Structure formats: C-alpha cells, structure tokens
Length: 292
Image (cartoon, rainbow, N blue to C red; front, top):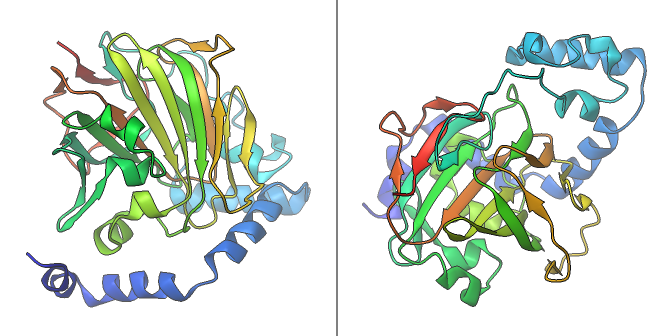
C-alpha cells in the first residue's frame, strides 16, 4: 500500500492530530516542560503529581516511595525508583529493559527496520548516519518498546555489556504515541535520540533512547544528563579507555518524561518470546528472547 493510501485509511481524527504536530513549536514546548518538570514548586508540584497519578493510573504501590508529597520535583516523581524485588529477572539471554508496550519487533530486512504499516527506516539513519556501525545490524534483529506516561521510566540492560560509545543525535521532537508512529514516516530516525552501543555475550548491540515532545531530557548512569544542551550537531563519546560494564538488569539510563527505546542486535539465531506481539504490555525483567 502506498503512503498516500495508508494515510487516507487512518481515521480523520488521528490524521489531524499528526498534522497538528507538524505545526506545534515542539522545541519550545519541550524546553518549557523541562524547566517546569525540574522546578521545586512545593504544593503546586505535589498537586501536579497527584493529578498525573489519577489521570494516567500510575501504580504507586510499586514505588520505593509511594508518597506523592515526598518528591521535590516532577522529574523526581517521573523517574521514581521501584521497590526492591518487584521486577525479578527472568532466566533468558535477553530480558525486557523497560516497562511499556511492544511497538514492533522482528528481523531487520537488510538494513530496513519496520516502524508501522507502510513505514520503514534504515539502521544507518537511526544511528545518526553511521553506516559502519549500522552494518553490524544488517540482517539482524530489532525490538521497539513504547513507554506510556504511566510507566516506570528508568531503562535497564537486556543483557550484560561493556560500553563502547554513546552518540547524541539531534532531531525532531514528534510524539511517539502509536498514532504518530503510524502517521510520521521514519519517526524514530527523525526524532532526537541517544544511541548507546555495547559489546555483549553475542557481539555488538545497541539501545537507542528516542526523545519526543516534552521529553525534557535523557540521562545515562555513566554520563548523567545528555540533553540539554542541544547544540544541534551530532555529539559522540568513545569509551575505549574506560572499562564500563553493566550487568543484565542494571539501570543504564532514564527518560525525564517518557518515550521509546529501540534495541538492535546482530544477525544470528534469536527467538523472541511466543507471547510477544505488537501492542502487548511488557515489564522490565520479563523474558524477551533467546539467542540460541
């Protein structure tokens, strides 16, 4: 089906929402949201957190601190820690690195990654134009997981890995909700993102943190906040001279307001869990795939 035919097959309300995003001042909204989310506003912050919990059905029983009034900023609440033991790790080569919902997953066709009906993007585009890095993943495997506002927003390791590099790729800030994924071609390779590359038990793999409208910033455990600043150019960090190793299930980063992660794995045997399907809710630590 052509892009034009696919667009007309989607509901009018959905198409209008996507169109509105092309017109919104997304960068300005995101900067404003980042300032507000990081501000210590006392009772107003608590009121906002309580509203958010009710609006999105956040399960505070899982939080290490379940008192909305205990969080000094909205970002502190949004990146809240979980109680110990609520996300046990399954016995699997690859475990789910986040709470969220499966967007898509499967084989990378050459260098093409499936986004939604009628939409693909290339591994090189996702990785900031680095064709040499992308070549590792040609004919490999991918998984895309969407984090909704209600989800836990720390990101963990699907398997152990030694950090090789991190790249901040500037870009758009479209929403990454399912309607926008269906309506914006190459969305994940257009939005701002942080590419984290590791060497693991089965070779090189990547975890890409994709930004979105009002995602104030993204952070990693070894670097801290990556963005802002947003200088508008690709920034690359190499870790050849440092031995940064993270165990399976260890925290590796977080979204300060939510988004999407895209995982890339090299070619070779990989079997996703039979229960996996687009739209299915998943949790950190659940079995994702076996590499044998």
